[in-house]
Length: 444
Image (tube, rainbow, N blue to C red; front, side, top):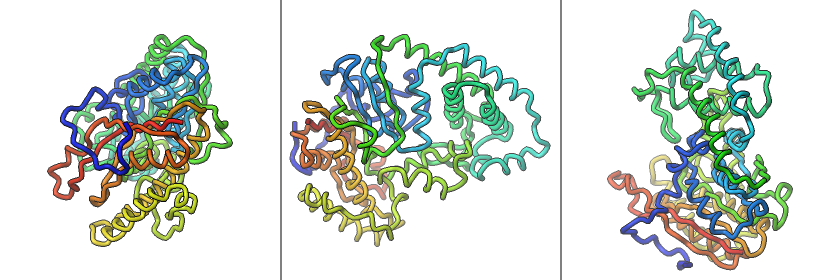
């Protein structure tokens, strides 16, 4: 049922079975889905439920995820017998998802290349001064996160993968497996996204690089067999695109999509670039914060203050947004003004005000593009969380619903999945605003 504009969240006394749909918990143990732990992901069960209730045609209908991430929507679409399109702007996450969508690789081919890597590991001569060697090979953070012998084995694996005489698909799968074991064997506390090398993870002290990698690749090969066996036999097509979902006009045709299921970034200051810092540093794709900013932060829609430079003029609402969404513009302008004042008296002086402007400016463009690609009489579903930076409540779900109406969607529905933030209720610096996670359904 459509709720009132900007209604405050209401307490939920009993959460239903959909409470975990906005989390990656269900997907962690699912074949292929769980290869790369992506805390910003969502449940494959939520996608399956959505697709099965969308009146889609097997082998004909196309599902789209404008925030593809780790590929949950696309994997489920392929499993159920629907075509899919996914767009991802994160240059490090994108190739991982392409590997997850490549199911045709045979077990024997994987095992053959794995034997080559094993020979390289066993034949490798450890440098006399291992500490100095590793310091030369990696940014300072990496040697702090691994035992030297383990890191050396991982380095040998990384280098051997570059010399494999194999297909790009197999190489990408083997590289994905290496990326996926890094946090398993790291002795540093590696939360999401934070990395704390001063906090030792005792459970990893006995783990070594090669055995862990070997087991992971065999598990990935078994996952491919599992997911192929259980998937719908209906032939389907899938496009995994590296790009910007704010404008896909040259990648996705008008009215070519039958259903959208996605989860945009939340307005909660989560830095998606920082999430992959450990992996990018190890793989040699970034050497420091400047690289992370240039290669990742600048590519993504605004959702973190680390993306904001206060001297940039782009953090202002466009005339199109103002005229298309006058009520939403007025509401956000007031919230932004409050945040601008609060940041001056808060520790860290975080730019939540400009982050909010950037976020909704980007979401406006994304929703506009989503409306363009959808066929008539279809719908788009978004898992979203509201936020309260510095205690100023931003009802993201309702705002997205209302902006969708302004852009041409006929109506929207809001379903609350769960209450968020309860675990921080004893934090004296935590605001007292009750937050929620919802599914917004926009109808075209």
